[in-house]
Amino acid sequence: MYKIGVISDSHGLLRDEVIAHLKRCDAIVHAGDINTPEIIEVLSQIAPLYIVRGNNDKGQWAEALPDHLCVNLGGKNFYIVHQKKDVPKTLNEIDFVIYGHSHQYNCVKEANRIWLNPGSCGKRRFGLPVTMACLVFEHDEVKVEKIEIK
Image (tube, one colour):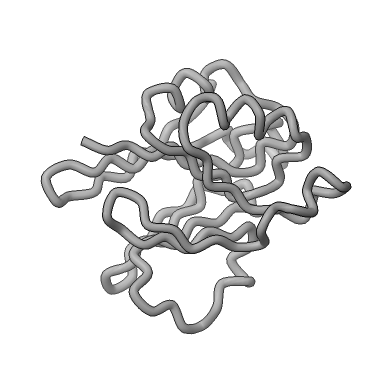
């Protein structure tokens, strides 16, 4: 089994419950709006971290963060970006598109590709629930788990 924790829009807040879920993961994807370098330091100590810059990631610490990332995790190809509107029209051989920004959880399968927005795991905004996701790879199957944070 291989497990990926997927978060976005932490906005400077890393909740204990989010950390507890991430500690059970083999890798972490953060789809931007981190807001502080301390979040990166904490996440990097938990598991390998794949992270992109969000529109609220400002300052010298954020300049080195990529605006998008293509990686292979668990034998699947991922395209990670903060805003869905920035996803290129052509995505050859991409199995998962991970994005954030809207603070709304969304998971849709189109053809052979999963589009996943884990929602926001940081400060509660716009009256939306606080959420994250985990991808569980087991026996050539992938299960997307939506996690609501209290």
